[in-house]
Length: 551
Image 1 (cartoon, rainbow, N blue to C red):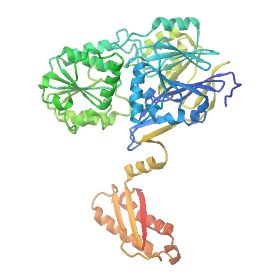
Image 2: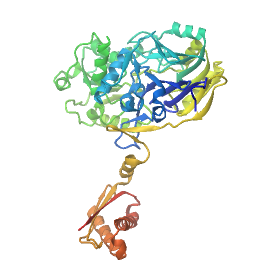
Image 3: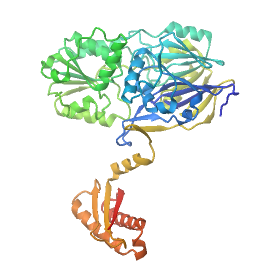
């Protein structure tokens, strides 16, 4: 394990390597650590009742006294969304741009932490000195304001941590990327570049937000009905685009979803969206002429509690779409979300509402670099080492291969928990440390494996069974066992419950007198009888709970 006498420079991802999202990156020198980003990721269908997962911070939490600070690159959930959930494990100073700080403070307030977390503001060009790390912020274009790349100067050289980025020649929100600053950095020498890999398979460039604005304007003009557009609430560039299009079409805008209000409020606090007319309240928008309303909604990935899902399944308290209305999904379909999204699309179409996605028209550009932009960035920075992050394994391997084709001497593909020695000597993974994911369950963080989630998964796929036994002190049944089967049996549940309850009674009566006095023996006999009689009927192994009442 690196110690204070170890003169090596280390990079350690605990999230965001071998996956897209949930970014957590550490840089270490002489047992002092700098954290860059601390984000969340979506839960999947195998995690019932869970919407969000966060990285396991236990490794750095055990070294909390050596954690110098956390620098946040931008305001997206996968880069700052876990701070409030993991705060008790890190408790270090936090640096963020004004906009990211506004977003973060709202999240901290929801947890009652707004007065406990020291959040410092930095701007493009600012320098932050944290122990041996001198960090300079470099403005870079992304789909949310004030995204920053970080030039991290260390005793062994400069590491360029790009964060999420693109090279957009026509950004609608904020300035273009600081190309000359990046070129000057490359001229001075870059040891390593830790770089976004999301779109490494995409040829050409990712496209400009200005082009999306023009396309949406042409697509949406002369539409006779209501228009509902859904996108990520944190994609302020897209929100600004939609506001511009609505203004050109003379449509009033109604925001649907708490997170959209939260992000637009944070934007206005920092000087963005200043010339936007007042939004229409969702309770009043339905009274306006259909051709004069545009809804901007959350739920672009099919989230059950998102505004678009509630509209699609006619569960929204104030918004109703009718045949002839239009819905636009102005975002990328993230792998893993297809089932929920397609169910939503089908329900809308069934109701006579038109659906347009990125597959149907030019309604979205990525905030991440495609291959030509990656090539340009490598031409500017000219690092000695390429460290791909923010991608699945196939993205990272292809990114390293692509970087080496651009004459980068070394390419290394780390996984979460791989401690990479960047210098001195050749870069290499020197050890693995514990890394993993935790589920956000209400106000708790719980393991994804075992515990309550394992029980939920079993119940979700196999159902549950509750057995109630009333016995005297000798263990003799004083009433027929009661059995409740939930989500287990198709057909006549009452008859099945009665038949299996009778078999459970037989199993209890057959126990030897001494064993009838043992609650564990009663429970075991009841469970075995249930499983023995249920298996021929369903083949399921439900979650079973036995309640024993001794009279």
